[in-house]
Image (cartoon, rainbow, N blue to C red):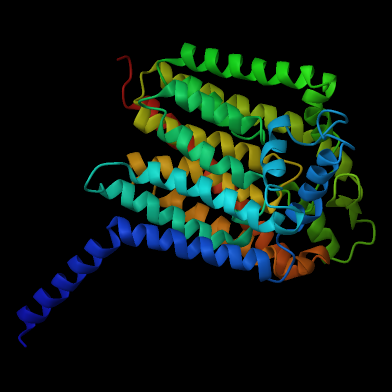
Length: 419
């Protein structure tokens, strides 16, 4: 075969591969394969990846079913009230199948979001293919934690909400508000929506009315002040070892300090830092987060006032809000990495080339999270230098994501000055 013939054959093969990978069948096949693998890892993998689901959520659901204690109603709870809905639903096939039912619920929600991401058009657009394959790869990189926490319920709601933002902002507001009453973080996406879309009054009205309705039902059910008890519960946490700020104390342990140690909090069920300055740092995370959110709001409002286009503003603005919540957080649980999926997918939908860098950074965060948790989490619990280093790199990647997002939001406001 001549050189020209070889080039034509190679080009033809590349076109065939792209055509196969770009088809719905391949995408759904990748989705099914990754979810099957993640389900298997959750059920049979080492490190007890479903610990919170079977050891905590199931107990809460069983207690409520037995008429004992309803979390968030009878007693204060660390989660918003709607978090109890999927936890209770996972009892549908009985306590012995709780884990399997939970994983089926999460997979079904992911499938709905994936279907909306792919769209109904006969021919898939290139940005949709890129975003869909990135999500599949991101889930694979993140590992079992992608399905095994309450956050996994909110991620498909967040993805779908952002996808509806341009054409159906009221639907987006409903989905994101529901997500926020399952786990607080989607409230940041509601804020991004209010800033970025022109129909912001509708978004605020829908979010406020729905929140008021949820609170009213909770109070009627007997919750009283417990309906918002998650705010107080979160404020009382210490500095968890996975938090970005905790790396300073972990390196002290690595250096041999006897004044710093890792302890287990049996009330919150987390491993936390105990040592000089740790409590102060934990207390400072809240004002630090407020300042960070305020900076994102100001830069976002500037861009919106300069009539930045929705496709250029909403994705980086959403990413900025989400990463601030991750960086300035006293908790830093591994499942927080799932939050990155929604803004990255939206960004790849609108500007795939521009979002290549944050997409790669987010995938790296997911991979580092997977390495640390759940298989070798014990090494972090003894402050092994290699794993403290990995956690430090992860924190640096999150900071890089924050810098990128703020720069992108600022640039979105520069493109249409005075218009």
